[in-house]
Length: 406
Image 1 (tube, rainbow, N blue to C red):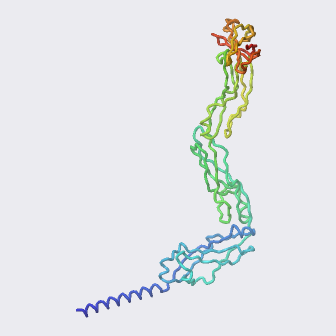
Image 2: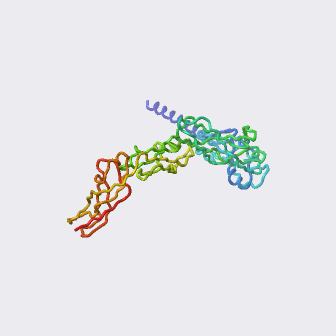
């Protein structure tokens, strides 16, 4: 029984050893791999070669290579053909014409070059045609489609780069008239910024499709400001005072509003444009005043109106001179005795004709201001303000009285 079990064990062990040897030998066996139409990548075309005034004329798709490779079977498992690259450095080329250039095989990252043998081609060179490099800067045009949202206006389009440099043979690039991008602004309510592809057109506005033309920019950045449009009223800040109420004046502005455009957020904060401040007590009869219209930075004046004229009339406002005989003082902090020496003061009052007609000197109160006077004895000339009780009238001008402190 033991002999039988021992025999089974040795048979199994023999099979395992044989399988291991077979697997090892099989993985080391060389396998041929064919890779077709591998494109060659050309390096330093736009740098070293262009700096010499040269360019490669033949297209990338015209230069491909079929490879016949030999490698161990276990290497095949890691050989991803999509990672296989052929590169050729053009920096050593110094003249135009057809010539041979070498290329290098770059294997997939998991594969060592020492484990791969190139059976064909045996000579790793390709023929390229080198020509004289010509340059041309062409206009970039923007075709705008669509309309901005209601209440907005499209500004001036900006493009970067402003012109497009193209390179190629003179016969190819001289036929180019302009490059064109298409910008869609349909229902836009804010500035539109897009990175757009472009197309080349000839002088007959026909599309040009040529692989021999090499633009130096792949895209064009297009910026189209979209601005909020708003009608904004023009206003004057009228300063009222006793005897000078706005309801008693008539006025007109040559322009009641202007149309502005700007960023939507900024425009939301603009409810009016103030032309300036006018104290109504300074208006004598009828006057005409012109104000410059000052708008915030970053806002456009679409109306083109830069000034507005205010015509204002005082209406039934008139003046009357009375002799004031009622005097007092205020703002005195000392313990001394204060006497107002002035006993009569001519005062010019301003107000409606009906109010002025009813006022006499006894209704006018002159109040001396002693806030700037120390408590020392003596006589002083001090400013005074005018009050008229019971009437909406005011005094015209400034007034002074004499006081004595004892």
